[in-house]
Image (tube, rainbow, N blue to C red; front, side, top):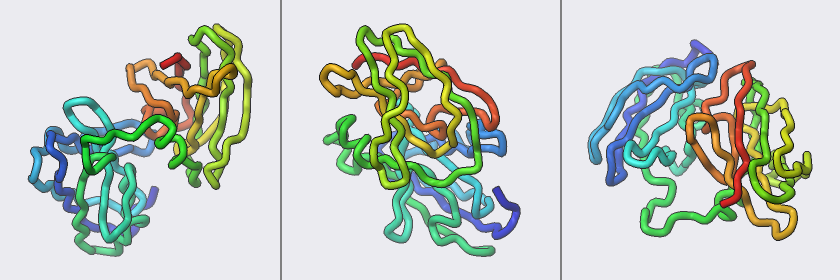
Length: 211
């Protein structure tokens, strides 16, 4: 994070549902800065170039995308969207699948994921609550799969990682993707601390379950 390069972002909700705008604070906690932005409405937020934001569909808690100047991501951070000192940036909030009628599959989501640099470190404790052997996988900076622990049903392991490092879990017998479920009921086929409310320098408990 940085206190340099202050600017104003104008977030327009271009989805068909109300959206919550969320700031990730210095400890990685989710802080709702504007709740229930209606479709078509815009919210202005003065912030800094390294402050990350998320947007969630208020109806189903799915993450939305931020789009600006041909750049798109489910995390908005000014420096990655071309913000500069005292500028005004107009950002569109859209559904992850713009068509909204063709949701992506778990494999699609996994294939688009890869690690990016982050200074926010934490520990995740994975527990295999599936009925079969599960292979835990880290997606490296090129999106390639790196096999980690193989967990028997009921087994657990702890992994030190970073906020923007994604993980997958696959059943060993058929390679089917599993679901990660946090203790606040957030779930996804891709685990990433950023999207599961992981605390900076803290620990988070995550269950691995069959679909």
